[in-house]
Image (cartoon, rainbow, N blue to C red; front, side, top):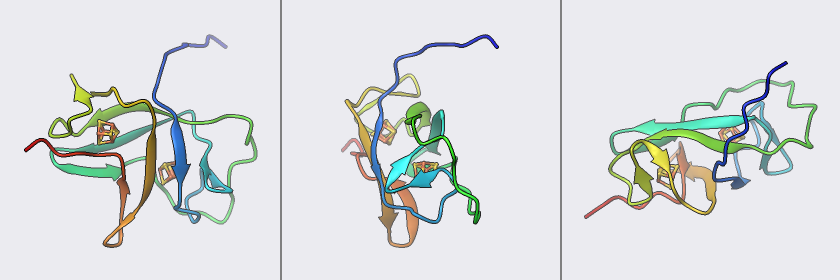
Length: 100
Ligand code: SF4
Ligand code: SF4
């Protein structure tokens, strides 16, 4: 299998324990995609009773469509790392800072 190595901001923490990629407050997808416009939701979230078995792998931000965020350049996240959690019942990037 060909591997594409890419530098991505890591997901430092995710509080959404019901997500299939979440084990012990860590995200173990290969990469996640965050929202669009001004909505920094985690598009990669899905709910299942079977969680990731490979917990050696840690996720990065593969793409982010929130161009309203200060950390976003050309629809890529330039933050050092991000955290994900619930905001008013929505699964959001907590590192998002909307440009004023
Ligand atoms: S960051 Fe998104 S995909 Fe990863 S565990 Fe949290 S909700 Fe799931
Ligand atoms: S910090 Fe901003 S640019 Fe990075 S993933 Fe979150 S919303 Fe997107």
